[in-house]
Image (cartoon, rainbow over all chains, first blue to last red; front, top):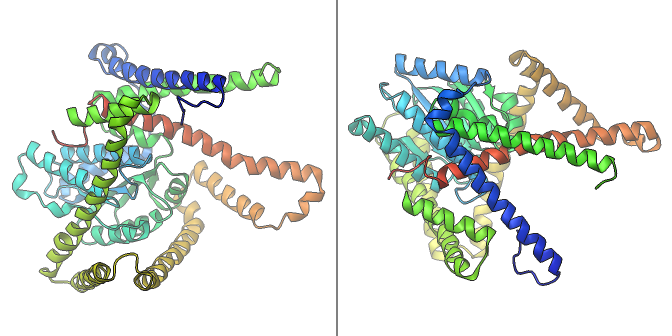
Length: 265
Length: 200
């Protein structure tokens, strides 16, 4: 963390000031580009092209099947905390839950959401409640559809297995902060013969999902799911900005390595 | 929305520019956030016990028995914890003596599940990704098992193995770079109010 008033070394203080300014400028630039790319003019002139992700294609298919045969979708947000640095993956899960609620509004069974954190539990209840208001199905809203199934990672995983059993779930999306306990959740999904699409911001979670789930989203593909589901224009815009930023970072890394080899650094 | 964006901006600006005026607001806000998160966990636990499991008591089926066990265990832990205090060493010993074996058993179950899945991976993931994953698991299990400890005396083999040791870190960095950018984008979407995982 940059220490603005560190007095040990005047040069270090100056460098930390520069770091703070650069960091803030990156955030502002990111936000500006996101707003710019989400404008209708840019979207029409430069329509987005999405890389084919088999998992996303199958989950779209699963959404259609769930609506047709009146089964349920399940979203699991992981055991990450809302005040941890890992919370963005859970927030993407909430966006996905909201989108599922919209896409399955004509289904008999609204989505089920499980989480391992109290903050995400309250937010998921809020999302489901908002969906019910928007789709005029408030009478059918069951507050138990959003539940915190456990407080520790393993108890959360076992709670998810219990929650999906007998709930009429035909497809399960696990998107959030998961560790090795994700293996138990995948096994529970297999036991009810449901399709599973999974992603985690943790390397360990991704490895487990790759071995156990039907389809896995690796790395930044997790954050692309709302855009692929056609949620908001800003999701597509943020994908463009992420891709641009990744390209810049790669160029900087290559340039840095080249300069190091040339003895300039 | 205004509250969410305003508090997010204060925390963010305070991180980059820790001026005394901003820190005077930011520090208490972060303390409140921790407290609110704790209360949210308590609300969620109460909902799980008195909402989900109590509802199951009225429904027929095998799950009713397990819900009774959960409710009784919860009440026992809460009542004894309130009576003796959570800092009581004997109370902690009893709770730990129950919790640790259960979590250890679940971990053992997970180990069996993962082992079986590793063996059936090639049947389910019939693509190059599945093959590479399986081969890399086997290679790194062999490398980290200590079987190749004699390689310290063979320069070429030692260099090769040190290169292999660095591969996972390099791959993880690439993945984590994408995750970091995605996290940044998600946070900014909420800060500018375009993504609202909350009502209002």
